[in-house]
Length: 113
Length: 115
Image (cartoon, rainbow over all chains, first blue to last red):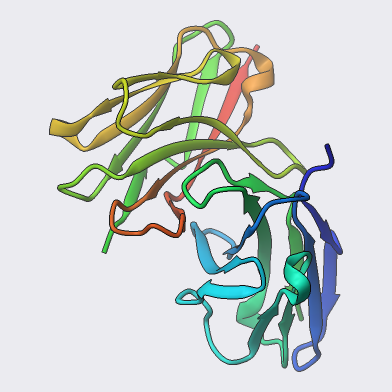
């Protein structure tokens, strides 16, 4: 069984540019989560999808961040325009049931210069 | 708001020594509790979880954790460290009031194992 995959593994962009991160959850997992770890800080929740619906987006920093999960399969997280403080590692996780184990992807390391 | 505190951002032990990584949570009602591990260039992997069953939870790779309500703690231990245990360890909770599964993480503890 394939695990959670994320693309790209690394992204380096200039301030003001747009970046789109992709997450492919484990097949059959209705729950999909995005988290972010800024350097030196703890991993923080961004949002939670159940199938294609946003269940909880309380962790989204501001309206420069847009997450989608069309068709309830893969998800994208777009940052537009990117700012320096958006640098960090973005993790995606999926689970079958919302209180079950979350399976994490390897993360996308985003650097905004 | 619920928070998780991990004492010590870096812990170093000798191979064969006891591993003790500390985690305290801030809630009068016990949440669901987890320990995750991240090896270099990999995603987080679940070590173990507490969901109100036995207070001593056994996980993978010889790790275990004990839930102590009176101390609001969930410390992770392993009797004998192995070189392959070198990684970053995260304690996390799902508050009892959050049914969506949103994890709240501690700051992480980097474990080094000396030969």
